[in-house]
Length: 205
Image (cartoon, rainbow, N blue to C red; front, side):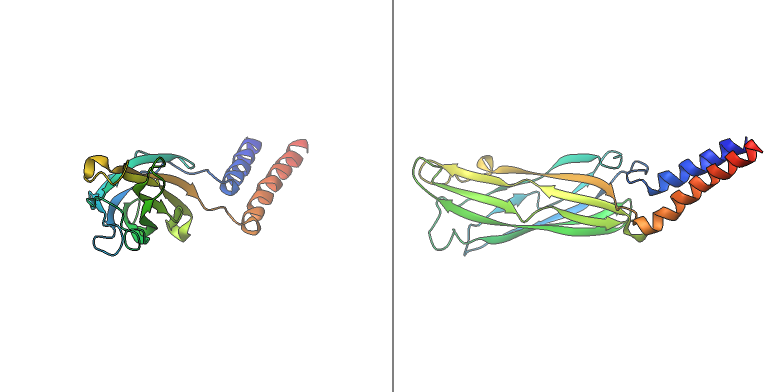
């Protein structure tokens, strides 16, 4: 009986140092899109400009992809020296579940021109990369947000204005946990192994 309890203690110690051992979590909150709405640069619009999101329960390592906003321009052509200047775009996320935390994903939009047979004029959206946010006690929880790049409003000789020629931007949320530093986790593992050894010796006696 003592051996069973010792095994349980050792297993619990090992689970504490292994990454990915945590319960499922649902995430929720709001977001706000900020984009270039005036010259110089390609004038873009996004709808909705603000919104909310809720994920299903995610286990550690799990991901959830959802529609974020639609982007388009009402400009009819790309003016060189103006619309082809890159302008910033960002999405600010404010989480309310499983706790209060937040951060922003940044990128840029630009008007693109090129050869007639190579999508000569369009708008292009690219993000600087995913952002990782920490939450929970000691910041041990991690959320990574990755947004999709997109081209929008492209035509044969000029832009096709209007939302129907825009692009849908999605967000992928991935849940993870911060790794436990080895120096802090090692004593727990060694303690569990020690309990197993002591139980074995007592049983043999």
